[in-house]
Image 1 (cartoon, rainbow, N blue to C red):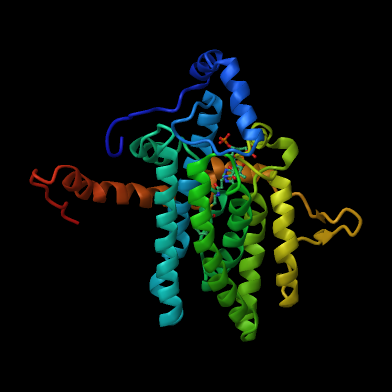
Image 2: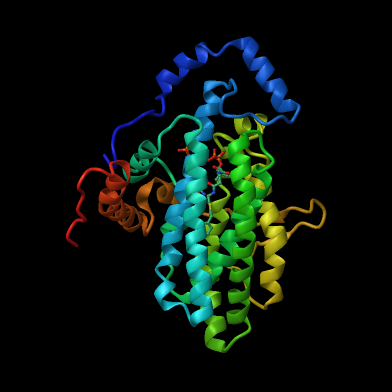
Length: 332
Ligand code: FAQ
């Protein structure tokens, strides 16, 4: 256990069924009417137990993604090419950790403690975004993350900022302002390589080839296989389906990549002129499942770093909680 006991634990499925039986049907009707009228639900308001459980799951996974997501780029702070790129990267990584804080705060309003969320991340019980389980091998990888993963995150977050749960929407609004700036710095660094020397172009092409499939996975399984979309969309937590978000992303960013004379590793990728939807090869969904369940190339490394940080920061948390008590830093 990291950092103490549970104030709240996510109910298991049997417990949840039990709770749902006690959801007052009249209150449920009124709740759904409020959602239909576009009202925001606030922490003290009545909400069905399944709405609470789903929000905790989604916001918590999002928070974990931000703090784990800082790691691939974080490893490049000391190696960023030049002073200005280094400054921008330091600021971006700090912002991502700040987003994690905002999101943990939003999830806490639903009754799950920070300690319980961190414990669930470190034990592997909670998920975080698939994309952060791949290594950032070259500087070009950092530009692909800053440009395309931030872009993908913005597509998702701009949509969901209009959702039904007040604290999550307000956190997303602020996050989107910062992510938009991240996207600009990522795009700028990406263009610099794409319009640079043959070696720089080759490096960015190689990074695109390796990151394309994880980025296609980022929006989640196809709608027909999405477990949670139906309920989440009914309750306006998710404001666009996985396939719609993927399509929006392709619409906005594939032309920008092609305009730079770069290619994407999918010969079936094209926009259908009749439907306006993008066609693409199905990414490997078995690989996606493996990666999100702990079997990706960097899952162990990512969690090990967080465990180290948790252990080595314990004395600081203890000192903050009990300023009168004598605390000493562990010897490194
Ligand atoms: N990775 O039924 P659905 C960022 C899981 S922030 C891992 O379709 P849902 C910022 C899903 O949890 C990036 N797991 O799920 C940044 C579920 O498993 P469960 C994170 C995934 O929730 C940029 C199962 O598959 N953003 O990048 C993924 O309706 C650069 C079935 O799937 C958010 O978290 C995945 N990609 O839709 C930081 C936004 N996709 O829980 C640093 C909030 C699906 O039943 C550098 N989240 N799964 O065991 C969402 O909008 C939704 O959760 C989706 C998935 C759209 C991701």
